[in-house]
Image (tube, rainbow, N blue to C red; front, side, top):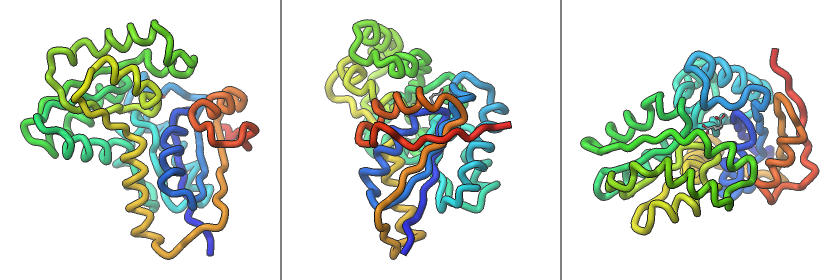
Length: 267
Ligand code: DGL
């Protein structure tokens, strides 16, 4: 019996954080990963460009005969999820809805913060969904554009990062939030610094594990009887294979160091 295959795409290597959560939850499932490294970051692009990039990245994975698509990039999820659901015949899982549902279940006072890229925050997507699921909720949405480069430069433990985290999260000091959503692929790698800044008693929700749980449930619905032999993991990027390999060892250390990463060029 063949294993179901999940296609995951992100603007780059950050989606490997989601892949890690998926492997933990679904160790039998094969995965094809696409990182759109030629066109990252998505987080400072306009809606039309993000939709276009998401569309071509998803089409590439659909052509690899995947059974399900996971949009691991929060920015792409914010803009393109509905469009991809209309255009593809595959089930499409995004990283936003599962984490918002979890945040709304966890929050006691309805004061919820979300951190993300400029594009994600400007989309208003989290704000709309949170207030839909938790009427009367107060949302504090903060763009944190320096977090991704700091993480990719392995500066998570650097004192400069603690200062930048403190600066971005300053509005939270008076907002009274009890729940913070990490609305970007990379931010779980800053979990400890963010937790130290916001203090005790605030729940941090990470998109990756919520997305993995949702994927697990959806996959059970479509392929309850299929158990894999040994799962396979294939990687494609649109540029810079070596940089992707290097980041992969930081984001998903359990993978073999000599990953089979191939170039998949866009027009
Ligand atoms: N993957 C993006 C996200 O989750 C962060 C990096 C980028 O801006 O492309 O929003």
